[in-house]
Length: 127
Image (cartoon, rainbow, N blue to C red; front, side):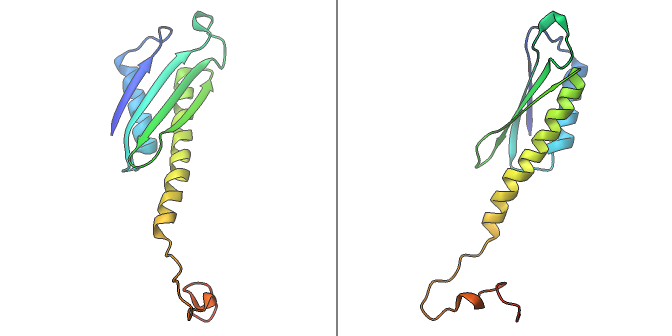
């Protein structure tokens, strides 16, 4: 999985920040094999004022065979916004990819005149 970290001019980007982002993303979404790339965008929306809740993290996961999944998080400091966005991304991917897996596992109902719809696997208590 490729992880790209982008910052605006209000964030001092350094190796420790990149490592922190990579660790948070890998811990949250590393188990999803379908995720090919995660783009992380960090900013402080009030620039030099450093007001509470203005640290912003947006994560966009590119998933093979599916639309991109995007989440946002605001927090008091950058580390909390990164953790919050990583947790949101994990939940969003669980939901989106879980639905895809459920659709793939469902068996289509057989088509035919002599098939009783109640005798289809899992619909009666007799089995």
